Length: 234
Image 1 (cartoon, helix red, strand yellow):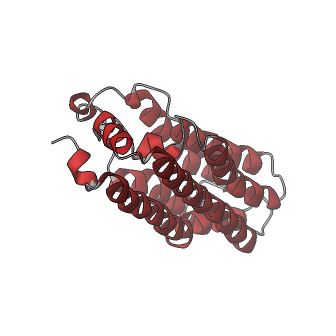
Image 2 (cartoon, helix red, strand yellow; image 1 turned 60 degrees about the vertical axis):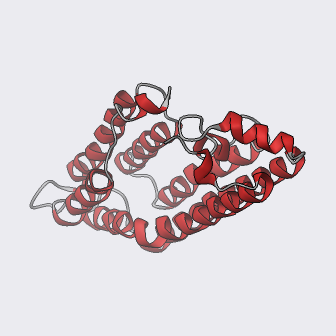
C-alpha cells in the first residue's frame, strides 16, 4: 500500500460480498444442490468452491500487490477441493482447517520483533497513522523499551487468536464432517461446517483480536500521553 490518498482508490470489498461468496453461496450449493438428483457430490464440490476461489483470485488481482491472507485463503480452498476430489478420509479436512490459522499464528510469533510483525502492519501502518510522530514522542519520553514490550504482548495476543481459531476449526471439522468424501452426506456436512464457521470460530477469534487492539491502544496512550486518534491522518 502506498499512502492515505491512494488507499481510497483501491477495491474495498464489503463484508456482505465476503459473506456471500465465501459462506452463503457455497453453503447453499453444498447443502441444497449436491444431491444425486441435482449437481451430484463431485460437481457440487467443484461449483461450491469455485465461488470463494474466484473471489480470492479477484481480490488478489484487485489489491495490486501480494496479500498473504488472500493467498492463504485461495490455498485453503484448493486444499479442500483436493481432499474432496481425491476422496481422502474426512480427518484430512480437520487437519487442513487447523493448518492455515495455525501457520499464521506461528508466523506472527516468528516475526514478533521484526518490522513485519502483524501488529505493525495492521495498526502501526503509515497509511493510517503518523508513525514517525508516534515514534518521536515515544523516544522523547524514553519509552522505547516499554513500547516495544507492549507491541510484543499485543502480537502474542494476536497469535493466540489464530491458535484459538486453529483449535476451534479442528474441533468443528472433526465433529461435523464424518462421512466419506464423494457422497451427498459429505457435501452437506461440509456446507454445515462452512455455515457454522462464522459464529463458532470467527467471532471468538475476533474477540481475542479485539482485546489485542484495545490493549495496544491503551498502552500507546500510556507511553505517549496522547490517544491513538491524535496520530491518525485527518
